[in-house]
Image (cartoon, rainbow, N blue to C red; front, side):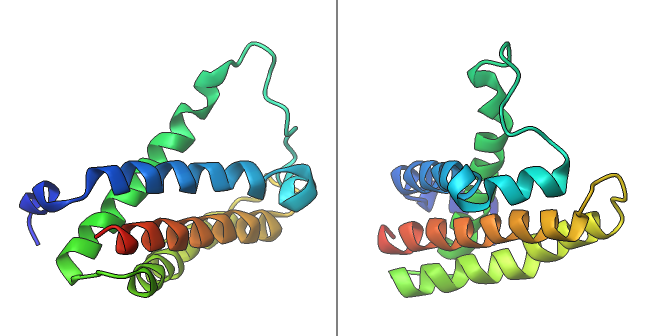
Length: 141
């Protein structure tokens, strides 16, 4: 694979997959889903500071874009060309890369009230988010 694969990507699919991945976070971390458990396990308040503004979401949307772009590049290089292959690719990237990284970080983060719970919630979000992104990328190949 080379960076020339960037020219072969369906950029609309990358943008839509990024938005879907990011939007999943709004549901995932909502109080009715994992929001309260995330809040307890992280020791954080779910409500951003009043003066934070929309800029507080710039880093999460940027990281969703980078992860989606990398998944799109792997999809192009591996010939992922349908929804099921896309879901599988997203699961492989999520379980194979994201899960271990988050759990290593969580294992050594003794500053959180429940680091393993926090890691499970965060890793779950990224695994499902990458599977969703992969589905969109595979569907729009």
